[in-house]
Image (cartoon, rainbow, N blue to C red; front, side):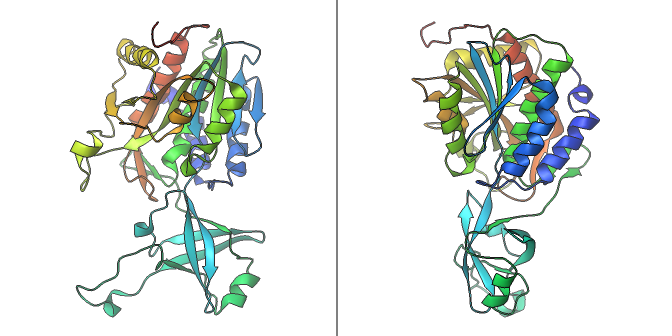
Length: 362
């Protein structure tokens, strides 16, 4: 398969629409509806759960179950306090970065609709040289143009409203995709393309394939924890993002050496099942898909950990998409890597045999 076949016009149109839609942790419903609408022609049925995880299933009656998984939520903020003069203070919903907040536009989601605001910051003229405060969670604030707290509340804004950034999808220098929330709606996009390609290429699978778009990863892998108990899979291949470490101020001795454009990243960690990882590596080598390696110490920090340690142990592996500027509004990935992650998961799925024993001692 060529890159243009994998990332065709229809796929990229969906990717842009899916990224531009707000899907903060705990409020993923609209994004999940878009995802299921796109996936519907390529699966036999859907499973959804109480908190919003969505699963498209191919061969739902098969006993042997394989999961391919990404997560659908994006980082955001909550309204935490409204001052008497109408300024809004926030707390995190996920790992939102306070450093990038000043001067950013925001959308506050209310029952009356979107209220626009801005993260304000004191002008450079008013700050003393050498004694400047840096942005912190307790000094960043949102201005919605209101004169007081009462006017803010009349807009529909109250404590608990969720806040997202409006930054939309862009293409940088022809082959880099840039947007907020690529972490990890790129994962949901990529597993959806695997399902599409299986259908278009008329591939019959000897097992059930559960294309799983989990919620609430950004606050502790919660969606994956719930859905793995529902599915009870035999195998799980998870895809998420990892850090490109080639940009300034990153310690490669600590973070590893990873670069966008050099291929999918295959992880090493206790949660990664050796035999499944070996199958993925052999698939990459056979299909001539470039890949990189990453050691993740005790935890991968992804939904892989939730699947691996569930149901008495599920053979799990992680294929990551290298990404620059994680948890900012300009998260950036290389289109070649997106295509190659899709290609690698697709071919790895085809190389799994129904009933295959990924036991540690097999």
